[in-house]
Length: 98
Length: 198
Image (cartoon, rainbow over all chains, first blue to last red):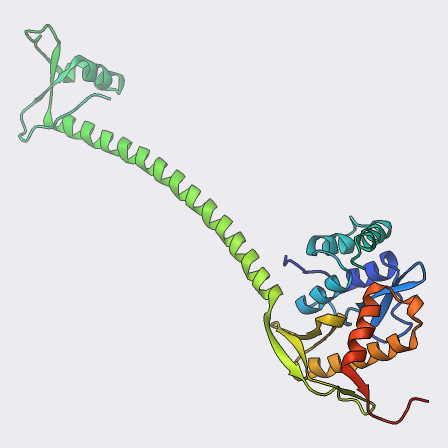
């Protein structure tokens, strides 16, 4: 198991259901993370292919989400909920990072 | 364990009481071992044949070898455990290397778009992995992934233009801190080349 070996389907589900991203609106490969009506950052959609995400793409999406490698894995594999993720982002806003 | 020193001739050998007891308990018949002594010290001594002594030496040699084999087996088992642990660590390192890719910088001079041009070349990051190449412009968090560097750069340029257009089209109040920074950066780098937007 690699450091960022994450399944494409699991990542897509986490982005859509937990983070609440909608890749069908706006640009084709990118969705905005919106909190309280403000567009905070963009998140790239995983490319459509079977199996694990490629490492560069996985690292890019992890970076988009402002998560550490461990947090990203936890988001995809369940320990981090949508509410947890929002708390992480709100904390970064409080810290003046976003 | 009682000391045994084998003589160099075929003459009988003398052994002490303790070894005599060992031989009896190991199945030797008392009649096969002649009593010799006692010594002046009062110690009982016995004579055993050279063949018997050979057999004892051989048996004790095997016993020693058996002990050493046991020790060797434990050493090998420990070494195997260490090899398995090292193998797991090596696999982790290989995966870490594979997930990092080879990174270098590249200059982009043109956005490949009819309507937009760069005011000056920009430096982007190119990361090569086994099965993909990623091009990134970290200042606005744009990235694109493709099979080759050329394709990744082409997609990155497209992404930068799309991001710029989207940022320009969005009211500043709707943008967070990061996208407002991105808009400032891109406005400094990009100029409109083509006909005015309708």
